[in-house]
Image (tube, rainbow, N blue to C red; front, side, top):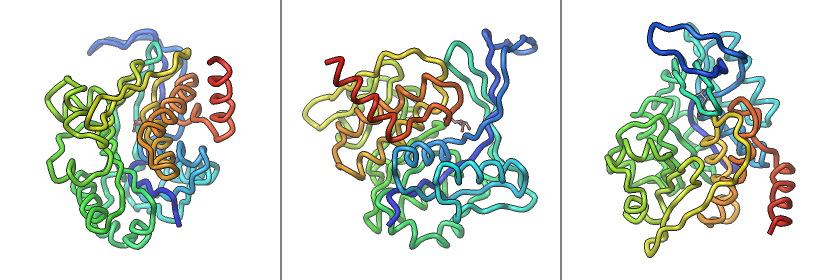
Length: 299
Ligand code: RIB
């Protein structure tokens, strides 16, 4: 049985590091450029796999060199590639990422990611329903996400939805997902409120809001639970949320304990942000053990 199925996007990330983001019409000189695997879905799959999960992925790439590059990257990271569809005449998704003082802004051109359909989901229905958890983001068409959420709900398969990039969610989706994991900007956009404590109280044991350097919060219905972030040097926050979601999913599968899963996910994200690139810094199982040991010794 697969631990986790991620259904989502695969992108080639083109990263420019700059000390200043240009204004419209302006040119600035950057300091470095890299082309690396990315995409929120792919990143979350790689994060979970590096930590020891048995991970399947369903998604689409173009029949181009970028698609091959991303499939090879999955193989290196032990993510099952047999459910990835290469779509003729489509281009593989790309993301143009500016990194400035550790923070980023991103433009995604979805390409083949937007060509996944409900029919493709039906083809993999048995596989989806036989996984322990389904992990979704919003870099594929919204109607396909909703279709998967309905399918999983009817068949009692837990779903984690990381609503990124932000999009308005309807009550059907919010009610049917098991966990919803926006960052603070996404939460504000989705719920029209930045009163995060009230929001998590409204959706106990479901809504987990990640707050960047302030960690993450959720509630057990009686009180707000706060989980501080780790104080580490920040190189690049790209993929921190993805690392959080991959690690959170695995921990939920293992222990089904939301607090434990958030602590674990915060630790994985703390390791990731110390390196450049979405997937580069994602920790392995052993690196997480070493980090845990370090934290225990500090106490
Ligand atoms: O969350 C980071 C990811 O967002 C990047 O890897 C990029 O591809 C975009 O999808």
